[in-house]
Length: 363
Image (cartoon, rainbow, N blue to C red; front, side):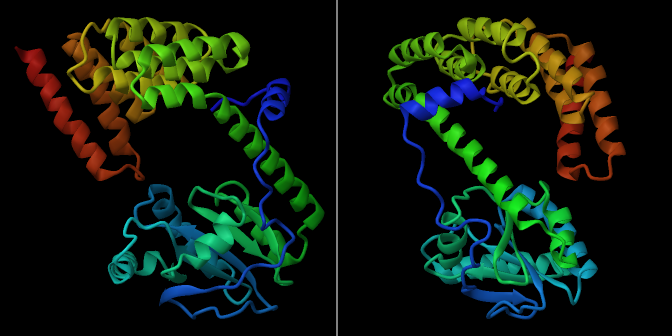
């Protein structure tokens, strides 16, 4: 989501009350540790004042969580004897059969083996850790990590790739500036409040959409954009999705307008609109020049990322330009194959689609 202006934030926050302040903040004593089962490493019953702790919340279904696991293992080895890394599973899909949930987590941990070489546990049946850590801190997305200092207080809260490493190093060295951490946390909370307030502005249109009142929802979006032109990109994205379900030609016109205006530099939005227009195949009245244009710009913005090249290839295929579909898909496959971090299943899927494009081009 694009960053909103301070002027817009002031309007939104004046119109809608801010969310309640989190009960757990940086500088507060860390809550207790109470889990359903320990799967790996020495259980932590209470915080040792000689150690710094990282308490990271994750789930077996969470892609970014899984991607971060090897790095947590590296940190555990790097700070052995100085910091302890805890991975606590929460938000698992199984909600009622608690033994099944624990078995799911245990199977995952076993399969990870040495790649997940730190302390691992799963939340208890009442969700104590989720409630007293994540929810108390106003956090909803995972992975989210908490750094607990040697004084037993929360020193930092955030996504692991947004400052955890440097703040952990400072906490271990005893150089962490707690006042700076508090100020940073307060800034982050203000930004979350602003986003929540802006989200509230969309609620009337969303409720109409949920009721199947598409035309009324579109009218509500028009009114919202007239009052808040700063939100044109987000409003346009929602308008596009509404039109997509009823009028393919109108959706294409809206996508073209967004490409030439508020979303011209938003890779994720352009990529997603391309995907929406090219799949599923049942959409009608599509101007195939539009998804090609969207994807072409997305490729420029991503410097030719393989997944974006591939969505361009598929746009060419749906347009009927099979030669360009083949050439572009070949680029996507080659780039993916050259990247050691690429998902083998994704590469296999691309190769399968490439053969489909080649077959179409050969006819």
